[in-house]
Image (cartoon, one colour):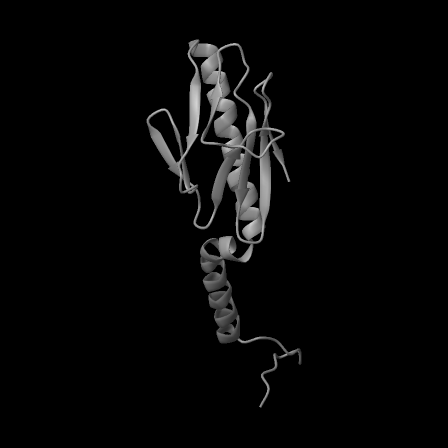
Length: 146
């Protein structure tokens, strides 16, 4: 028999509301773990933006310290090194450096104290998505190209 109030309105029972609330809490708790697998393009974009930040930081460090700064990409393509720190990309992301305007491979980008750099293009990719980071030779400016 349906539950009704004294005024005759139909409504939800407390148990039904608690069950719905529990399901919502479980879904919200699982979201941070499922989101990267559901949105690989966003994961790639986040890694690209993070790498642009690292490149810009290396350029600024070179200008301030007066010493060249090198961002070296490991042969496997799954990590890069700045100074003494090695940084790994998220699972499945591969990065390769090539010369700007050409197809020659490089392993690093060097930033000089005058603001210039060795230049190049950093290709970062997942199996179905890719994007580029262009590093200007004269200006050392790092820019994400989607």
